[in-house]
Every structure is written in C-alpha cells, then in structure tokens.
Image (tube, rainbow, N blue to C red; front, side, top):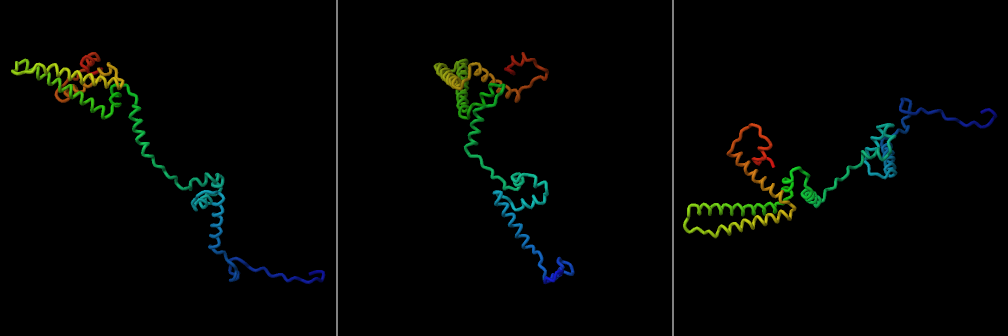
Length: 227
C-alpha cells in the first residue's frame, strides 16, 4: 500500500454456485428450510386475517398473480371458506304452513268450489251423514206411497208424518251448519243444484248419449249444464 503502512492481505474471490469450480463444502439450499419458511409465512397470515381458511388459499392466490392481489382479502378468501351448515326447518313450521294454506284458500271465480275447499274432513263426513238420512227418508216415503197405491193390508199411515219430520229436522240441521259457516241461501241452493248436476253427469256418462250439435247458452242453462 502506498505510504508505507501495513498491508492487509485480501482473500481471493472464491467461486460459488453449482458449477464445476464450486467447492464441495459450499452450503446449498435445502427444501426443508424453504418449506419451513413458507409454513411460517402462512401461519402469520392466518393470525393476521383471523379467518378459518384452507392452506391452499394462499397458494391459489399466489398462482393467480396480480389479479388475485387486487381483490380485497375478504373476497379473495370467501371462495375458500368452509361451506355453511344448512339449518333444518323446525317441525312446527311445516304444520304452520299447512294450516295457513288451508285457511288462506286461493281466490277462485267459482265460489262453490272455494266453499268446498274450506270444509274439513269432519265437516264433509257430517254433511254426508245428513245427506244419507234425507235420502233414506225419501226412499221410505216412496215405498209407503207405493204400498198405499196398491192398498197393502196392515199399512201404517202414521209413518208418513214421522218420516217427513225426520227429513225436515235433518234439513234444518244442515241449514244451521251452513249459516254458521257463512253460506247464504242462494249459495246453498247453487250447491244443491251443482250436486244434482254432478250426479246427473255420472248417469249420462254411464248410460246416456247426446248429439254433438252445438248448444246455446239458453239450452244449457235450462238443462242445468251451467248455473
């Protein structure tokens, strides 16, 4: 060194890397250290974000490049979050829906059909029982009239009045039940007429035949096809 001072020996540059000139004892990068660093980075990121995420979320974000870095962390990690648990519907809500569906009958132009839908099974069975009593009484009256026509000996004429009273009592009970349900007299008449028409249609489908010419509305109304 110029100036007469002591000179410091400089070491010659040593070759490094993995070439042929590299010394055998040079340190190499180990994969275990790289994996440990990545695991530590992921643990720090999990602790900072405070979410329950899958380990593949950061790998997917790193592979996505800049496009993944532009998204907010909540949106980027939402796709890798655990699926939400679907809650089961309580058992009483099903009964509640059925009850509301039965009470809130869908609006229809046919008022008679709407009244039929509002009837419960118990009410329908009770009305059918009243109808059976009325039909049985009318059949008994017809049988008595036929016996009276042929002058059957030992005929009991007092049964006419008793059977008529029984029929009238059944019809009065049915009308009282209709009033309790809010059915007017006109609606009751239309319901009875509809029932007779349905029975008539069953007989016509089974035994009767009809011409295929077009019918007017007046003829249909007179024959009971329309109300």
